Length: 326
Image (cartoon, rainbow, N blue to C red):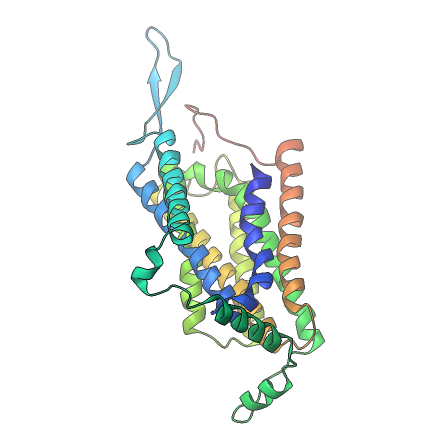
């Protein structure tokens, strides 16, 4: 399952360089694809809201005994129905693709191709244009405004920052979500699962409004992001009885910290990618940028797996047991 999910998420970005020369969107295709990927969380989030909070522990005393047995609340509809809804979305997408590909429905939107000869000519012109040097284009664009080029030192700094941020946000923290959230209740974990997917679309909108971010500000935002992540690490390390456990104030605190951290991390990842794409003059800049994201994922997940499953550094809560006795 993990391998198929990895192929599904990363396969799009592997295919983009191959299909960019043949699409009308051209170099804007990655930004469009990233926006569409961010919006894919909207329908699952709506389904989660409709499903409601489930899994809350209710301790029921056994008859003629002092032992408490856990009983769990049920959602409005089962996980099977949720997966059927997700599968229905995928099937609807497949049916739409089949209708667009093998029926004449595209003529209703006046999107049909004129003729094959014009298509072949357009593709050949696009490929020829893509293979031309960019010197003339850059000179025309820089006649009114000069383009700032990135030094190797700044480029390496951005790669290091992207690796560290990816290690924390994509590698470490997802493994600690249960230890940091469940001590504050099942509802805290439920609302966290709704808000975190929304952080990426918000960061995209923020990057559209805030296009130019200086290097110093990126460094300061990274430090601020690391401080928030440190708070989450400390709270997870205090499980099963962190500060303000089993309180509404504690739940609001951890959800707010995690949402701001996720929003900042996504914004930094987008901003660093935009800076490298627009200012780095060397080859394979975006390739190394994507490689640092994958490297951070690897550096974060493996150590946390060892700490959690082999050494038992983080302690989970058992149902119907009393914790945090003052």
